[in-house]
Length: 429
Ligand code: KE4
Image (tube, rainbow, N blue to C red; front, side, top):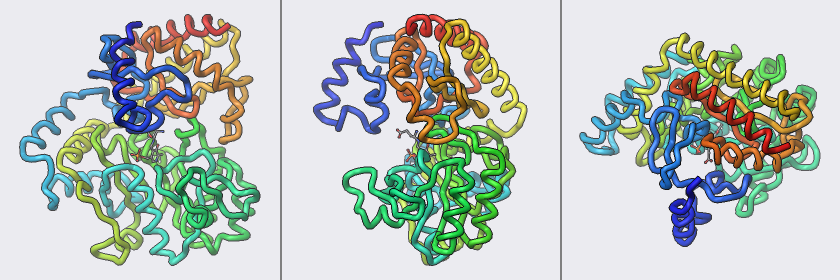
């Protein structure tokens, strides 16, 4: 595989951009090597600056469910930018997008758009704190909600102890207002809510995890979390930045049948342009300025080009049978990978929800939480990642991430992926 131009660009990039990238995971630190610099993409394929073509399972980390350069999205964004890229004033497009989300999502009466998922999550938490007049928040180990200081926190020593900063620059005082629990552990939920439920402003969770690989909630987990939040007056925030309109036309909450108080959106809602959003019950969302006292703002919030791209994307996701077709594609991918693993005599655990999938190199046991993921063989993942990349399959460069399949991945692409996996597994043994 030719890599000269990417290598040269990485050398230049590192002299002017930290690590040569604008988001850490892109630097391939978890798998080693130099990342290909991408020049263009179309449908399920991306091309790098050395002319290599890959079948893409990153999909810009989730937004590209329609495939790259989807014609309707390109046309909508192109027409929008011809009318200027930004006004800093209300537009009809924002109203239409908000109406579309409110109509589609029973739990959302009001929606505020932001420019990223991080902004959406930090704003939802601020609204929850303002609404409840409480300061302590609860998050779950392995879930990622963007890089606001008080969310870069790891669990303290005991359930009821305060969080610890998980990055330099995060003041201990900020971390101390964040409690962390293991994902999928109902007993720990019961214990914490019994002890401190009345102190909590909110519980924020990825309803189906994607940021420690794909992990499904255990049976009754979210139902119990919902009950405990209701019982203690805690705002339940579903962070659907990744799962939103990815796993179901009504997001993970529609798939799971759980109604959160607030929902965070991102990725697909912007069609690949910078966009996030948060929304929920009117009585909570009407706390948000200018109608309420909780301040939140953004120069490019509701940007007309991102709104055009996001609206075109959501309109293409209107019917369930599109998701059914995508489910068939992803089931065949999962089945083929399982068979290839078996034929190679390699044990691993594949976990999938719709078009989000992760292959964990372990003894084949199911993965329920962050500790289980950390115990997987991430060195082996790195070797396999490169064996696949060299053969034209572009996977997320970390064993803690989800793969994303688009509507444009054809049966031939899936077959090619499985054949390549078969060859790559052989290279491992
Ligand atoms: P952004 O600020 O990156 O738009 O969104 C943060 C965020 C919030 N919530 C969830 C559930 C998310 O998955 C994300 C961002 N996801 C990562 C992928 N693991 C983005 C990739 C990156 O950081 O470069």
